[in-house]
Image (tube, rainbow, N blue to C red; front, side, top):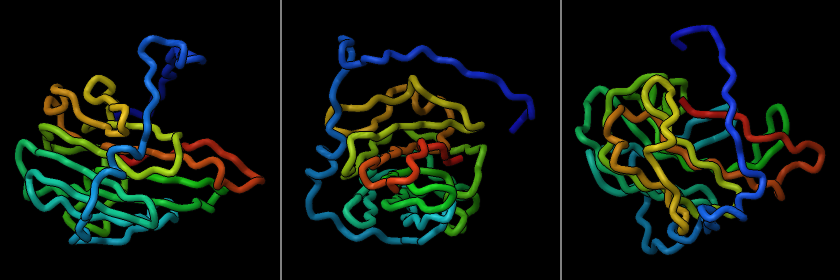
Length: 209
């Protein structure tokens, strides 16, 4: 990071959000499950991240659709870049399984991210900066759990809470301000608690950058 100094971030959360006028129930697999005749992904690479085997497919064009599946989890992405840079590679990745290192907890993850280099084997390795601007994106998955947490990061590992929204059908989509800064990652983290080890139930505590 730019500095070794840390800082405490505090936010006030509503413990009963369903009582709020802005609360909406999300069916996280509704949109993704409606997509039929899914074609097989191309330029596919298998990469281990935190000892978990992810599958990635490279985004070779400046716009289009991409799908990647692992087991019964399929991740769907629609995107449009301002410009496809030759020096930066982006990929759509999926992980669907039990994480077994330093605890056991079941994850379902769909992620759009910048790879560290042009080599697909570096997808998922730590990256802090990017130069590619996206005009729009829409990410969804056929999640088996209702506990799905969205995250969007800009270059510099900056959170971007005002640049996306979640639709009731489970799509994580961009807002108009998304093209203002280079994009680092767009991720949907799913936690399937019922499939965790009965001995340990740790919270999700990883991020891609």
